Length: 250
Image (cartoon, rainbow, N blue to C red; front, side, top):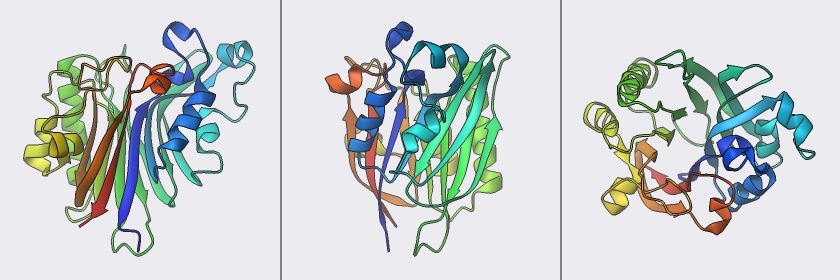
């Protein structure tokens, strides 16, 4: 029975460095692989972009999600959130275990900023219940994030059995550290880094992380270990550090 999981979350900045200066998806894939995660929560995955696919010679033909999953993660799900002329981007879940159901819910709080949460049910051999994974990217303004957190709570209360193992990870944009109260107080989730180090991880900007933007919340797990991946290799390819955790099912 696979009771221990390695998970990671990473905002890949659409596979390019700041100001679209350099295509970094290939480097990102190698770094993500080195995390040795069973399940990876990714944000800002640009699956289609007509101009960039012509500009960058190594742009993957099958899209960024398929390219990142390639040979390591047999299953993946893509939730298309932001759609614009010539392309779209959203959240992705990569999984070494079968994803038996994937639902992408639009949680946009304003027309100018399209956001979504990707809810996947993952079947792990030997587990009596499926694992629920929610990958999300919240809005830039506090009132939008609050609205999105209520939508997240409503989804969990209506679709996730209280006894089922649950992981929520992604870019919360929550530098004021307000959003997590809804998850902790009403849904009894633990933030992984807060549990191991007293506070959520500093993850932005990756070159010198100051703001606590990215999170990993869990229910039904013991948190064994957490890591912030903000060395020069990660700082070269995204403005966010990657986070990882080792979890053991209760």
